[in-house]
Length: 395
Image (cartoon, rainbow, N blue to C red):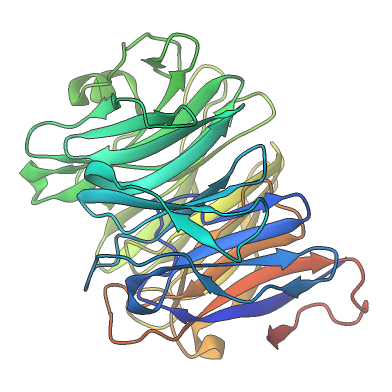
């Protein structure tokens, strides 16, 4: 098994993958589909064909109404019939979305009527034959369910106080529950983000629950979140939305960033069945919004992909770190900012990943003067020559 890096597109803009708009990549029936924020703020798509080992031609999905705004980066989902849905172009505005004209094809998309509201950060999740679309509406994280012909009324699941914001990112379906992690941006701290929260939505009764099973009703208030759902109190330290996945016991693991300028630290904590473990130090970075993702192979084998310091400023190097059950250690620098010639960021593991282990991109936070940022994929391929352990191919 060997690993190489493909450059599969070169029209990225600002943050081609937005850290809390997910998923950006999905594996389905022999292809890994990827969407991103590209030239003119528009959503683009391609896929990696796992049979031919090739990338499809890049296609524009639709036209974004946003200008000088990187918050409208797209997410995607694929239904059980193979139709591809792309959600894009919202920042406290109508949610834009499009559906592929044919199953498993990116040749043509039909732009659908806007989901009218003040939405941001779309996160679609398939539950059987139903699609749940999670989004933020100031003051809430909400979801709307697609019934095949229309979007059902919104359900508010996480609330902020009247002057605060909620930032929900990673969400994971397991055993008829949708698990979520979030942080709040507090007006009292000049809108800096604090604390790490976790709860799950039980799809049997549509109520929210804390990690130890306390029924919080249909909506978690900020007071309830701070009482029952806090995985980490960051105190005066800043944070952003954490990464979260479940282990084989269905217990959540969380990797989060915490600190104050100029030094921030990646930590990991997990639920051990009765409490959140003492945070484990991973490494430091120099920018609050340097993103992360990880994969749990077992409780003694976890792979994390982190955006570390690189050169000064936003973004940096993309590194792989491993957990052996007691400590974290660096495995490799996947690609450095120096090699790429631009900062890197937003590592994303594709949903239901096969061969394409990771996607990430060059990253210029809120810089819209450049629209030729490169997008990368880390691919494991058993058919590669054994001596080619890591190569960078400019496709």
